[in-house]
Image 1 (tube, rainbow, N blue to C red):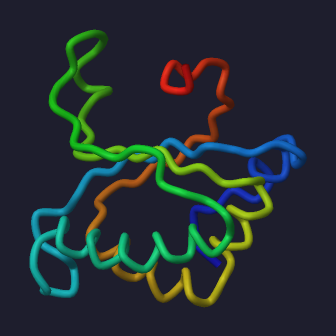
Image 2 (tube, rainbow, N blue to C red; image 1 turned 90 degrees about the vertical axis):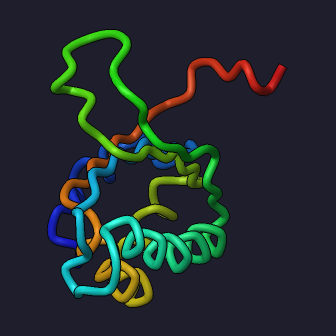
Length: 130
């Protein structure tokens, strides 16, 4: 099992609704396995994880680099990359996170990410659907 997975937090989510996970990542300068940069390792992870997400009916909604903190305490914005990932249910997210295939992909994530925070968010507004 993924060490930092908080089962109680996932199980506390409304199981009958889709969930979007806000991912915040900080990369290592070099991958722990010596194979390129932290970003390179994250790309290896991302190729495998994207397939696992799709297999469970999910999708990457948006991803991009973070470029500074125009509002709020600067120390809270020290992240390199962010992604919004949609899952049809918390169970789909949990199934992926606990799968052997994810455990294989996760090695690359751990090699590349110095920090990785995932927060579950509920959509209250989506201006893109207008």
